[in-house]
Amino acid sequence: MTRIMRDSDTPPAIPIDGTDLVAGYVSGGATWPPGAFDRFHGIPHAHIDCLGTVPEQAEILDVEPHCATVPTAVTWVRKRNAAFPGAYPPVVYCNRSTLTPLFNAMRAARLQVVKDFRLWVSTLDGTKELPDMTGVIAVQHKRAPNVQRDGHLEPPSSSVTAGHYDESIVYDDAWDPGDDLPYTKDQILDLVRLGVAAELSAGRSKAEILGLVQQGVAAELSTVIEPTGVSAAQGVQAAIRADGALAGIAQQLTALAAQVAALGGTERG
Image (spheres, one colour):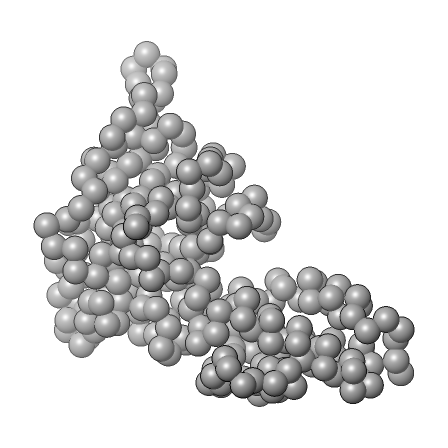
């Protein structure tokens, strides 16, 4: 089953209807402002690193003029894989003419398509598939309309969208930009919530628990624990012991704090 992914440097221009995934910038001049992703509630969010400077915060690297270069892509892929071992491979966005130099550079660095990185390829001429789709998870086949000589926008077509956004077909059902870690963010949050409830039952104060939660969500959950048989206390302990930064999870602190406040009734200690 294919999905539709839309991206733009102007977040409000992307329609909600018909959008299965939304992609936005987290670096560079087109960086989306705070809260821009909130408009797409319930739609998976993909994050694009235009400059190649935040591999821990983006699933996709943009390789094109005024963004990252092919040599940057090699470094970025290595850093991204090191930050999230065992996760879905990082995705490199580029056009068809960049594929050969990209493959040459990756091969020289002993990085393999499919295993070490995947591709999001831009055609923007209505072409939906490449002759060789190895490692290609998505094809960007539609572009935003240009202004015509009469001052009107181009009408929508097989290669032109209806607004200021580009459109891609995502072919890989396994790609979920929210699942970059051994646990998904939702699973991590569920473990922390269970741990919070368990610690409240054990008599620990809400202030103490919130301090533990803040430590846990600020760290990468790299400790491998099978989803089955994990106790609530182990969930909190795993989050606390983990090393490294957990990109994108810190914004959940406010919601978690509210849940801590709502759990257990009366403040203890």
